[in-house]
Image: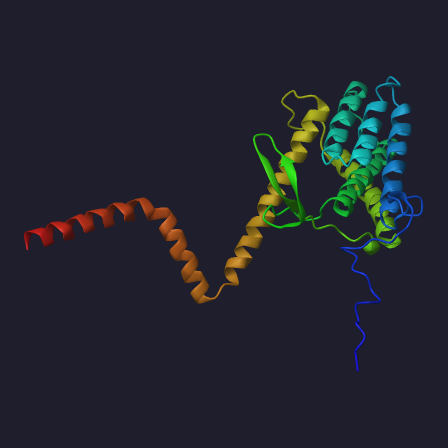
Length: 276
């Protein structure tokens, strides 16, 4: 009596592909999860372009951030969010005025929310298409191929890239991303308008002075928070853990002196042994 092979009815997805024509295979735009973030990024770029068109900027200058964003989506450019922020800041620099009134501008909040949504959507797309955790060059799989580097040519398998499964993306996740982007943009503009304009200003332009104050406030807050967390972690230590920690600190602080004393002690023992 022969037992049926349980693997005969199931194919290995890593070694076999369905025999479908190329026109029937699902594309990236049709893959659930990927299409959601593609739409988020494209809609965000459209909103950014429309807001910039309402500013006092040349029409050609408003296209540069949009083109950078589209290039990042098309070729999976990992630095696209950074260059989008740089080009957007350059465009707004030409439109920036030095008026000192505290105003809540709806267009600024929409622009911030769209930019934040694009940046978050672009990074999530990179996690779905490329890798979501740092690459370990020691982990490789697949048939070996020639890899041409800057100063090296190697014949080895491809590096394993841990991607996020597109099936894990839900509509609630995408909706929460859009809602949180709008909330953070509104909160950021409220905090920006609460900063003082003239108090303590040694002569910097008003936007620069407010940016300096914001940097100091964020830096001081992080310093206090990390100091409290460090103190609480030390209070939670046991006696053995605290002793080991203090021994480590003692060695780091006095390693030069201990090395010198041990060297002289070893020299004295060797001299004593030679005389005896």
